[in-house]
Each structure stands twice: as structure tokens, then as C-alpha cells.
Image 1: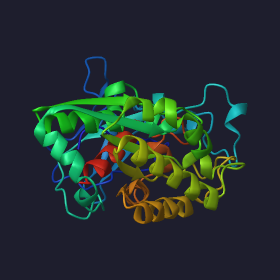
Image 2: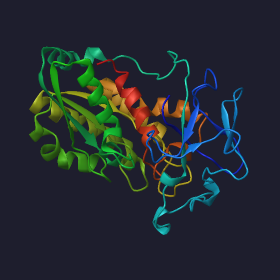
Image 3: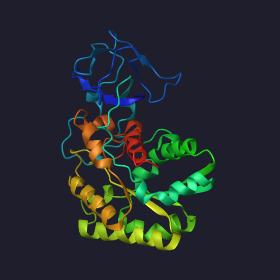
Image 4: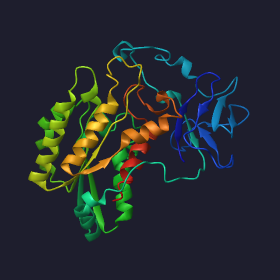
Length: 317
């Protein structure tokens, strides 16, 4: 594990997603990447590590930021527009450690039956065009570097896996969009690019207050998929979203229903499905929402983008 994120709340223990196999190699720093400018925190000075519970404890006088000083800490039903400068970027602590991966995470079935055309093109070599289409999450909101956006990581992985191919990944996403705007932008953002594969992810803005009811959400997704297939013959990976901060005023907090709807559309349309929702929730059993949210609302941080990447890579292409 490289760069798992937590925020430290006073002297409360912060839990890691997985249990380190040992304290050797455990490294705690202030930035996601091990850059020269990162502060490397010291055991016994800044934190204590509990190997049994896989938790970090912020010590008195620690150089680690205290999340209690975040402007949204403790706020219930908050309206982010009333808090200029909100966000979690300066509050994260990032942890590297060795753990034993298991076949229980990510919970992602291989989807090659829906991606045989893409696999054949990648094996044959030549240009392979991917368009990532969705909302601000897909656009890369709160990733600290373009290469940390989940679909860019995945495109780089495909390039390594299929060296004869020339993988070209294009950002067709627009912040704030629901499937309504997705339909409106489809021609300009996707169809004109003549993709071989489309990563399709909506839901966050559809699910918010004043958003798109589930029946219309499903209809919109199906229309998007049908047009992509009909007009480009590209294959599609449809992926679900995760729940926003439960204390955010504008969330309906029904993301489980929208994720189930997304899965249903994938099955009915016979396209590949990447189950971000279930896998995010699995890690969230041990982690606070704020540990994973770059803007403290509805954008994954760099580690959250890693979660997306792991799930989409799990489709097996």
C-alpha cells in the first residue's frame, strides 16, 4: 500500500484499511507522493501505531494536522457554499505499509465477456482510444496531479500490459453534470472522438437534491449506451459512484439505490460493470468519510482515485 489517507482527529485513533504485516516499512508522510517536500512523520514523536488494531494515534505536540481545525469539522447538514475555502487537502496524512492482498477486495468480477473486442484490439497493437465520460469525479476533481486520476492510472496500466498498443485516454467529463447533461454533451464529448472503449460514470449529481429520479437516470444511461454502440461500436464499462459526506446538505443519501440502478442498467444493456460503490463501502467500514474525500463533500482524494483504479482494473482487461 502506498499513500493510504487518513485525517487525524485530536487523539482519536485513525484506522487503516488493511492490517500491515509488520511495522517494518511503515512510513507516514504529509503528501501522497514521496516527494522531497513531504514531511516524514516520526513514530514516538508524531504518532503511535497500534499493530493489533491497525490504527494510528496522533501524539501531543505532533506535527500532524488536527482535523478538528477544519472549518467543516463537526458541522451537521452543512451547506458548503457558506464555507469559502473548504476542503481536506491540507489535513491528510498518507501511510505506506506492506499487507497481504486477498481475493475479498476488490469485490469485482472479471468482465472480459463484454470486452472481447477491446482485448483483441489491444493485443493487435496500434491506437486504442478510451474516452472517460461523466461528472467532476471522472474529470479528476481533487486529484492532486493528472496522472493520479483513476482512468489515467488505468490507461497507463493498459499501456504496460499491452506494449504493442498505443493507448490514448481522453477526458470527456464535465464537472457538475448529471445524465441529463451527459446526453446533451454525448456527441461533442464522446461520439466525435470515435472511441474504442468508453468509461461511463454518472450518479453523484443525479442523486443529489433536485437531481434526476431513478427511472429517468436509468433511461438516460441506456440512451447514452445505445448511442455509443450504434454510432461508434465502442464497448462500454459502466461504473457506480460512492456516497458523499453524510453531513452534506445537498445529498439525498440514496446512493445505494443509484448504484443498484447502475448495476441493473449494465446487466440489461449487457455492458461491463465496475462496482465502485460496494468496494468503497467495504473500505469505509474502517475509515471515516473525511479520510477519502478531497473536498470533504463528494470528490475522492488521491487514495480515493486509487480505489476507483483498483476496481476498474478488476474487470480484467
